[in-house]
Image (cartoon, rainbow, N blue to C red; front, side):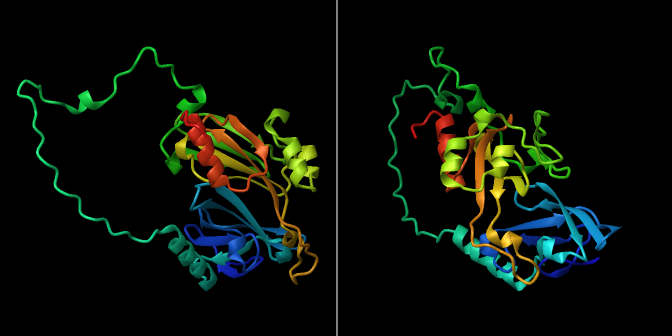
Length: 290
């Protein structure tokens, strides 16, 4: 089915892959690839036909609902076919960044034969493993929640503005945002002072509202992950189809760190480098010095 989005006209049907950009024609500001998991449903609205379907993120496995009204494409998501030249050029650039140059490894000298005492017994792999010490304290509960990084182990559910995390290994579920956009976290899980110190558009913070976007950052590597809460979008979010009405402000977004039981380990606050923050928290949970 041909659908006119806020960027390109593209074919949407079950199994097709497509890309959403945060800012039209500028993938560096944010781009995510999806696969449609169903054919679009068509209903008639006041502005024309409304096309709705769900897509699965190829990066995180998150299920996202898409909606495009052919009479209001200025408010539609900015979608592109995955084979679009702009998309392919950006993906190739990212692949080159993530692939380190090959290094030549000098050959290792052959090890000298080791003399073993005649009376020594054969060693087995089990002998090399450290045995538990009764005097060693057990790791804290939050450090024992680490699970394999498998996208199928975790999923997200969205209903309207609602956002729920599901752990399929343990059956644990936690709703973070209600269908009408209310953020279900305690005040202790929000660093109000740090957020107000850096950001000026704090209406969604004061009302605990998810008006723009609430999502997951990546997989649960090392048993932890980051959740993002957009308090105020990039100024271009308000542009109309002709590119007018936008502003020059940057996106205002905060993050929290959760474990596989979906407990909030680090409260929502501004984070410059989410990957580095996750690494620091993982080291702390493993008992390493930050």
